[in-house]
Structures are given as structure tokens and as C-alpha cells.
Image (cartoon, rainbow, N blue to C red; front, side, top):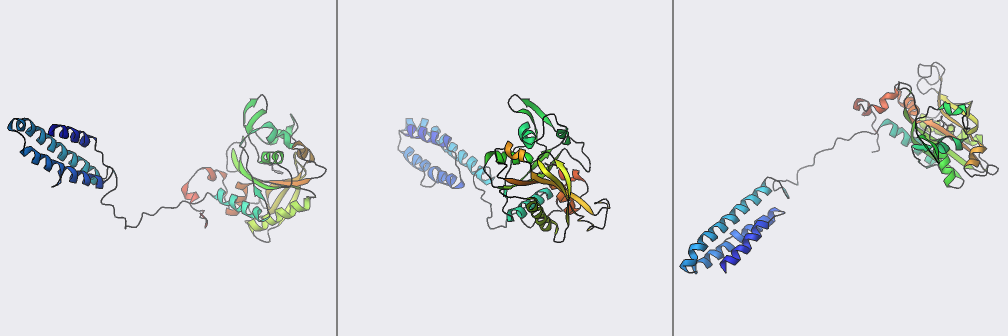
Length: 345
Ligand code: PHE
């Protein structure tokens, strides 16, 4: 009888794995307490026959030792904080402070650009960084084998039997195509993202940078709408009184095309090294969406017109913060990065 009970308790003790200090204490009370199992067994032991005592005496003592040892082990576990809650934890102590990082200047400026265009009703869209020939070039009216494709030094990845060349996108204009292919006009969106060009890295060029594309397609959209939209953007971004000027330019996907300059944000237009003495700095390319591009994307170019623009976020940031070396943006030097504190986290 007693032997059976002891066997059963032995198994229970061996399997015991407390998850808290409270469970450990319950174990102590159950087995080792003044009204516990071991006390009961010793009481029972007094009544057994002398022959049995000889065997059971040792069994009972071993069992008691086992229970005591087990208790010591599990108790220490909780005291050293190995498992469960730490008994010495003072929950009333103040927490340790986190040192907050700061936003990357490019993220800050991208967000500022997005906020400005949101006020004009532009939504935000994104597209893939790995693109096929159609979205990066052909749909945008770059003729096959046309030298215009060399305007942008492309990182080609491979050739796909169905989609032709697969490459890292050289501009965010590819997202315009995706947007127009997948929806119905009117479109009024900006498309921020990273782009890649095969250029040697220097203070003035990098193999990747960031652009914000803009697209506005509807009935009766004119060049005047383009000018007013960009003028508003510049006043919001660089302050009222900042001047703009448009110079004729060429892009395969816009006709007519222009480049937009603003009065130098550093010297205010009187001439300095940033604007190379001219008083003007270029900030973006733009134009009316070429009817061929609209048709390539399934949009009726008789009914709809639109404008598009594309600006480099690095460029906009350089002019805002007077940063002269593009490489700083990707070197992750905290001495540089921590200078850009934002009020919004
Ligand atoms: N995609 C052009 C570039 O990367 C910029 C651009 C966009 C020009 C839209 C006109 C219209 O240089």
C-alpha cells in the first residue's frame, strides 16, 4: 500500500516543472508542509509491521530526500530569474528611456512632397523596381533601338521570352504606365520610388536615387494646369516668392516637354556656387503626356489629355538643406543623419 503510494508520488515529483514561484510554494506545502504528504506517510509508517519497517524505512527516507532536493532546485530557478516572474522586480520603478532616432532626410522630404500634392487632390501610387521593357521604355514611346534609350544608363537583369528586357527601372515614369493600364481616367496621382542608373558614384551622381512622378489625366487638361500645379508646389516647398521658369526640353513620353528651374534657394537668385552663378537651379522634367503614351495604355487620346512630371528627391533635398554630396544619403553616417529632426515621428 505505502510502497504503491510512494511510487506514484515519486513519478509526480520527477515530472513536476513549475511555471511560477506560486506553483513551487504549492509543491512545498503539498509534500513538505506540516500537514503534507510526507508527514502523513511517516504517521502511517509507525503502524506497519517490524519486517516491513526494515524495507520501507529506507524507501521513505529516500522519498523525503527526493522531495526536498526537488524543492531546492525549483526554488532556486525562480530566485535566479531563470524561469517565470522575477521576484525582485519592482514594477513601480520608472522605465528605461528609448533614444529616438531621426527620420532620413529623403524620407522627410518625400513626405513633405506627398503632403503638398495631397492638398491638390493627388493620391499616392507605387510600382515595382524591377521592370520589363514595355513599362520602362516601349509604352513610354521610346522607339525600338532608338538612341533615346541611351539617355538613361540601364542596369539590365535578363531577357524574358515574353516581356523582353528585364531591368531595374530607370525612372518612375514606368508607374504612370501601370496606373493608366490598370484604371480609367481621370488620374491624379504622384508616384514616389527608387530608381537605378548605371553611373559612376560621385558627389553629383549615384547608381540609385529617388524620384516622385506626377500624372494628371482628364478631359481638357492643359499646359496651364501643369504650370499652376508646379508653381503651387514650389511656393509650398521653398516659400512664397520662389520664382519658376520653364525651358523647352525633350522626353519621348511628353510633347511638348520642359524642364523647370526655380530661383536659387541658396542665394535667392543673385548667383552662388550652388546655381553656378546663374541664379537658377533645375528641379524637374515635365510635359504634356504624348498621345502615343495614352493610346499605348488604352486611353482615348481624342478625349483625354494630361500632364506628367518627374523630380529627383535628392535634388529637392539638396536645395532645401544645402547638401553638396549625394553620397551622404546612403552612407548611414549618424553624424549626418541625426541633424534632421522632425516634429512628426
Ligand atoms: N522620367 C523623366 C526622367 O527620369 C522625368 C519626367 C517625368 C519628365 C515625367 C517628363 C515627365 O528624367
